[in-house]
Length: 309
DNA sequence: CTCCAGGATAAAC
DNA sequence: GTTTATCATGGA
Image (tube, rainbow, N blue to C red; front, side, top):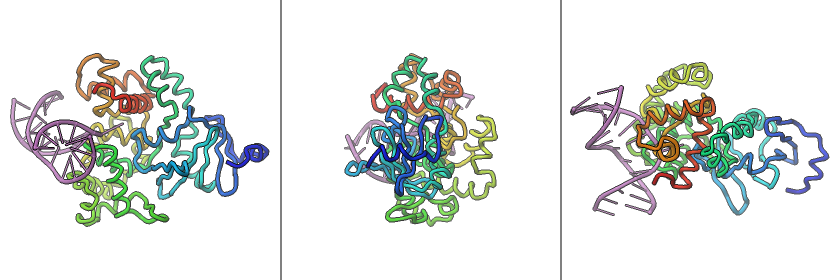
């Protein structure tokens, strides 16, 4: 950063009451002032397993990601974030993508009444739940099944490079449903998705045929109905459906239960071995409307602390 | 070499 | 309705 005093003298172009922050224009960047790692940590947010298209360059201390057909570069400073984007893109895309109008301090305060969650939250208090594009989320988590995060990231990068629209430099948008539905199998095979290649192609074809595959439709449905409808897609079972519901922002009541969440819940809460569906319902009932947030804090905590292994 | 990875599917119980 | 073998690929 150049000179904080200069920007402080300017009138903020917008207030963000949820964060208690203000947005300033500075050259061709935007400054979101008053953000500390304790309430928004880019590293933990991008690498806690909810998304797969962000990278970090430690030489420039810059995060680069692609979403909604836009490339964004970000920097985290001591008390502010630097957005390399226009005011229009910030307001139209990133403000919602980063969930900036939701008060995470209130959410964390509520969840920290639970002593176990308190430890998980204090381990990574800066995680925010991204509102990701519905189709990208669906395909990404179909690919995630029985895989690992490193490989998922490469699969999605390859898929975007081969089938997505070129944006700038080496960056490509996530492919459209039509692009995957019509893609030649030999091109998808280049991405080394394995047996999931058939899943994403059939799911994409079904999505192209549907006129209801959009956020508004699923958000208008009760959780169970949205989940059942998503599970009609090839490659979407209960866990993947919950990931789609949570990470695209359909409902924050979802509690995706993978091996790590199952382990941490069995070890720290339930104190015995149970089924996956038992853990999923238990989490939803225990954490209610905040189940999705609780899940992500617990998942990351379990993953990094190797709980239950 | 075997085992596992943010699971889903079809088939068997 | 609930368990179980199988699925393609890469890393440990």
